[in-house]
Length: 540
Ligand code: TEU
Ligand code: CA
Image (cartoon, rainbow, N blue to C red; front, side, top):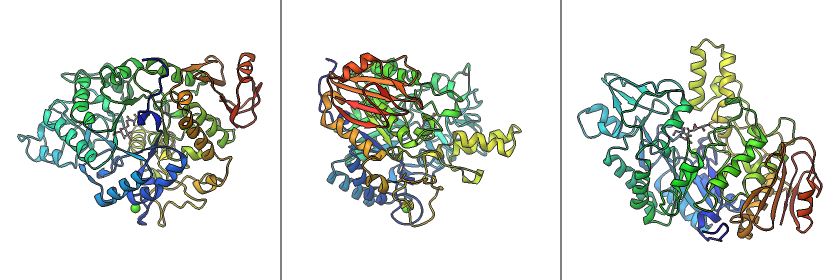
């Protein structure tokens, strides 16, 4: 296939907006976001210009991991509403021409799931083999910290949980498990959803015999487990038994992937999933990894994935999500104007040869929140981190600092609809991020220079000129520059971004290219020869 052949496939053309349902909008006044709230909010997503809405989990769950611990794959959790509320949401989405994509955690269920409960009450019955049991644990550590194996009270064996101890890994080797998951996906596709985001799908196939890991710590273990021996076989099954039967999109979450592994999964000649998103950015949660934010590395990630998949298959671009600190906190600079940083980052990831994913609030330039006490933490991972630090002898203050540096709560605070909040009439379930002025939807919709307006302008660019901004070939013109990100799209698209706080001269070769083009958008102080701090200009 040639490098820039326009292709009308909707999941390439449309952009994705990710909703965190607990925190999007509360319609019934209990302080927690819900489906009716989402229905009311869809027109705002339409106005922004996204075309696909991915909702983090809404299925039945005891909410230890806010829905990524599912106890019923065919039920809406009552906290979020009813099936009728969901049908109303789908009807509104259809009216607005938005596609709805659901999130399914298929690597594990909650231990409250009836399957796990049956596995406990009847160890010789059919549900025991839905999960992974050993008499003696191996050395694996859970991603959230602590051992990856737990023994239920009164049981003889340990079950595997790569995440929280309430999230038991499913035994995908058991064909009955696979049938259950495929059936659940068809259940929702039959009701009109347009696809799924498959949580940690790369780790469903475990290494035979579950051997000890050379390095059992969480992240290295992840890399070891990603892409197990039967992953491709099961993804092909899934494609045949589910996705090929509908006009839908299957988006894999891909921890542990490199471009070669990912390319195999989205290869049009042997299709498994439509898109899979990598962890090169997701793994970079700022201070949690203690890595510097290196602009040359940042640019190289876009380049390596474009080279790795390009038009042979299709890339997706996830930079921020509900598992991370806020985008501008991870890839900003403490001193800069946050709205300039937000716009500069938007210009890096919305105009790639890929489907961009916008995480709720990033389109407003929302920043990290302030957390001053352990009681303010909700994230199970952060609480585990805090507890482990305390048990290792760290003081309360040290343990809290560790948890605050990594907690996923930063991204999960209520969506700011108005300067006063506007998320709920009640006290929200999680303390909102302080609004230091103008970081709310109403203010930004009224301001043509807002971050929101900038996001909308870039999404409009993408949809108005797909040959250039969606399918045009990608080339990084200054890969080694320490601050400037200048890339080309197709024959005429050119994006210049200064990812730093100091003004930089544009190299003459770039200035020359600009002379035949028109500037479509600009933020900060930028000219054809100079890029001010965190400035952006987009030409075609
Ligand atoms: O996340 C997978 C996951 O491993 C991430 O938490 C990742 O390790 C981290 O972001 C790296 O910085 C998915 C969901 O997105 C997450 O919310 C769930 O907690 C997790 O799976 C378990 O279902
Ligand atoms: Ca509610």
